[in-house]
Image 1 (tube, rainbow, N blue to C red):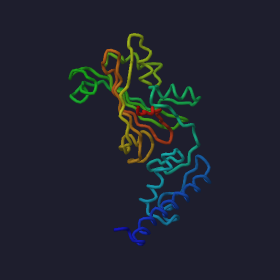
Image 2 (image 1 turned 90 degrees about the vertical axis):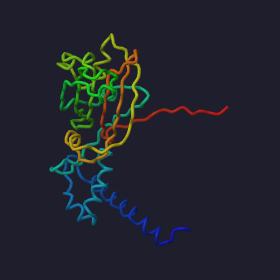
Image 3 (image 1 turned 180 degrees about the horizontal axis):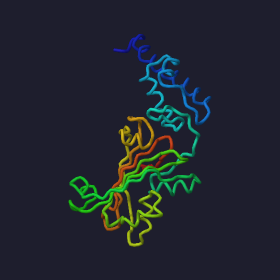
Image 4 (image 1 turned 180 degrees about the vertical axis):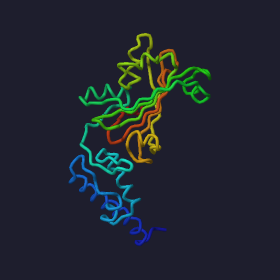
Length: 252
């Protein structure tokens, strides 16, 4: 049985209203100078005739594009357009290497180094024995003075000594590992998915809890088959663009 005209209109109308809301927000953002704060959520919702929940949903897409920045308890700000960090997924490179090629200024923000003991989960991820000494490096990467990535690397302590994390460490564990002449890295197996920002990561990236992030969970392998690094990296979608070149298989 087909859908009635009334059913079709019932489903289409909310989409039209949401599109109208996004169009109005787009015009408001475009007319607001970079660095200026937008009206508060209650005021915007009242002005646009929508609920605050609907307004937040519409705002997420603009934040994902890097057009606005919402800061908990402070407000929503229009941001300067920045270069997007773009790369293919066929080759593993650090954010610092990509940014240098684009002449984009990046820097390390908050840094935390923890010395841990491998429990069952960590031992399985790194293919080491339980009880093995590990080092965990957690840091924020800034681009154009804005936090755009939250990175966590977990490694056997033998691969990253305290001296490696002293003066000169810019935030890239990968670049540190590549400098070691005795360590031959060969491949990274990576799982990619979209996730909601936890309260901790939202604070670090100065976004709202629940905002969508790109998550890369990776194991970095050496030539001998050992796992050198287990990492999970959170990226703000509006500041990164990843692509992959795929071969076309033809039938014979």
